[in-house]
Length: 135
Image (cartoon, rainbow, N blue to C red; front, side, top):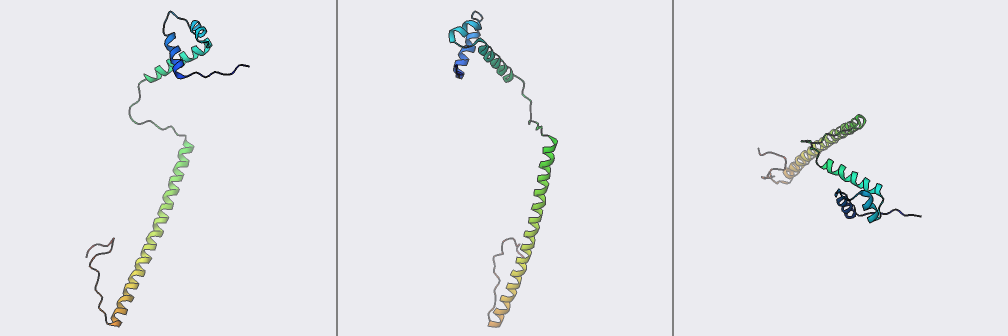
C-alpha cells in the first residue's frame, strides 16, 4: 500500500526552476526526482497561475463588499434594534437623573431648614458641582 508523500515548498520550487530549462523535459525530471509527471505539471500550472494573479492590475480604492440582501436586511434590523434599546436606556437614565436631582434639592431644602432651626447659617459651596455652569 502506497502512502501519500508531502513535498516542501522549496522542493517544489527546485523542480519548477528545473522545468524552466527547455532542454530538460518534465518526464526526465520526474524520473530523476521520483515524482509523478502529472504532479509536476500541476505544480507548474499552479506556479503560472500564481504569477499571473500577482501581476494583475489591482483596483484602486476600497474593496466593494458583496453581501447578500438577506444578510444586509438582517444586519439593518439588528442596528435598528440596538438604536431603539439605546434610546430607551437613555430615557431611563434621564429620568433617573431627574429623580436624583429632585431628591438632592429636597435634601438641600431640608438641610437648610434644619440648620435654620439649630441657628446655623449655611454657606453655599464656592466650587460648582460637575455639570453645572457658574452663575
